[in-house]
Image (tube, rainbow, N blue to C red):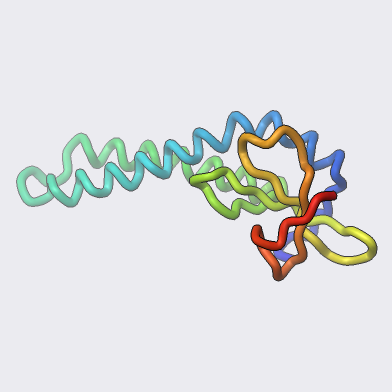
Length: 123
């Protein structure tokens, strides 16, 4: 596993309210960063980037802060577009990931450390 923290289902569920606020911000910052990068590329030829450059830095700072928050909590971001998150956990003596995606009510799935989303199983 990539972190030392091990979550229980209750621990992971306790994180969800905050994640419901942060993941959309992270997704918007990522999209904004990509859009700003495209605008900078187009604008560099004419004016050196200008305003698009300042948007890029703002989005980059937001994205960096949200990813750092997740890393500090031991939460693994798997897909920023869908808000797919894994929480390192143990189940029946095995290392697993509790799996949650933005829009789901609670932690209801897990998967093995090598199986990924396609290997999700109900708790």
